[in-house]
Length: 276
Image (cartoon, rainbow, N blue to C red; front, side, top):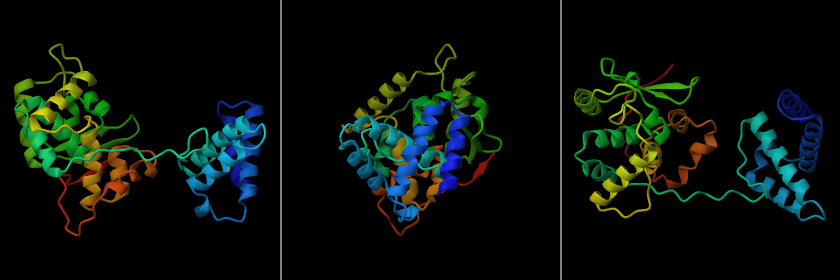
């Protein structure tokens, strides 16, 4: 374990941390591992780390030390094991978020609630590819290839994913390009500027009302629903992680408690996935 702590120390030195912080963080991690030196790595759970930090904070004059130790341990696991520890600065576990998931039939009704071609396409793209609102609004016409039937998701400059467009969506896209002829962004206003997140949220809530739903949902609920439905349909969680653009598998795993496992395989609209 010492060699891992040494690697952590060297990475800190290469970063923005001063000598005092590097020495303190190294010591916090060393004390932590010395406390649990007989436990295998698999037993060092978030709950165990949470209990350790909270117990440390209860000692006399140790609250600030506990906070710093928590930061050091979380950073160690992130740098060395690419694992994000789900605890707060106080040491308490971050509770599972309350996520609303639409049923497939509800998704269909929400999409069918609008006759506006632009709005319908925004809903379809977001749900069928699990897009975040920021990525949706950053899309440009060149991200769509109707000739090759591919759709490129630009998560960032170094991570680009290309997915296959299925026929029904391709026809919707052809109709949209013919009617709107977008210039700078796939979804833009009359000044050829990207639509605002607020305008999209208002559009979505209007669709919810027309569909007869009073659920406390946001546009992002479409992405959540895509994720759960994909897992239910048999998609490998690592592939889902890549599609969503998550750095950590743990970020994708939050959807597992919402999955209703069914032995019947439901074909996803993602017919082919490639990376570039």
